[in-house]
Each structure stands twice: as structure tokens, then as C-alpha cells.
Amino acid sequence: MALAKLDVVVLDCPDPRALAGFYAEVLGGTVEGEGDWVDLKVPGGRTLAFQAAPGHVPPRWPEAGHSQQFHLDLTVEDLDAAEQGVLALGAKPLDTADRSRGFRVYADPAGHPFCLCAC
Image (cartoon, rainbow, N blue to C red; front, side, top):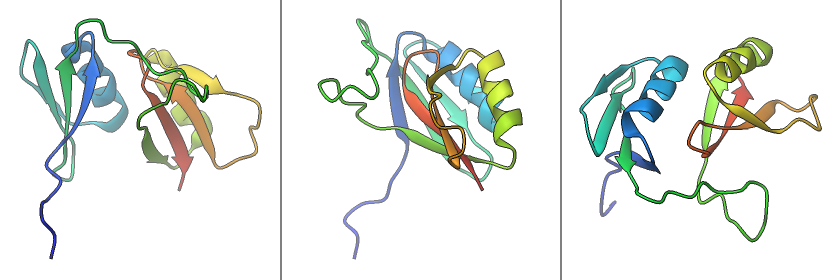
């Protein structure tokens, strides 16, 4: 028997509303809240939350001395189309060396790594 249930994944960032808006464009859903805590209600019932973190320092992927701490894997049907979309929204590519793999690595506007993964 589990001791707990996963409630929400929270990303620390300098501007919760802006980062929630980025992920709303990527994943769909509704942004709720203002100030230091903003929720993104994602289709399918999940919530991704964003919390203000003064002095936020983004991870530096893939540097071993600066752990990425976590990352999101986002499944897409068309890697090229999804890549163009996230780049237009302000994502930055982190790994462009091998384009033959079934995934690509980016940083969101606050510097958190995430992957687009072919389904």
C-alpha cells in the first residue's frame, strides 16, 4: 500500500505566471492564480505548479557539477514541429549533437531542462 499520492509537481522560477504561460502553450490547459504561486491545470486532470523563487539559479545541463535536479519528458507526434513550437515560445536547445535519437533536450525560459520525446 502506498503511503502517499502524488499531488502536484512544482517548478521554482523567477516569474511563475510567465513560466505557466510557456507550459500552457506547450501542453494546453488553464493558468490559474497570481503572485508567488500559479497552477497550470493540464488536460487529463493533472496540475503543474510554479512557485516564485527569489534568486533562482537554473540548472546547467549536462554539467555533472550542477545537477539538473529533475526534468520533464513531453511526448509529441512530430519532433520537428514540436521543436519549432517550443523554440518560438522561448525554449533554448541544450543538445543538438544527435538529431537521429527519438528525443531532444531543451531548457524552458527559466532554465529547467525538458525533453520532447517521439511517441
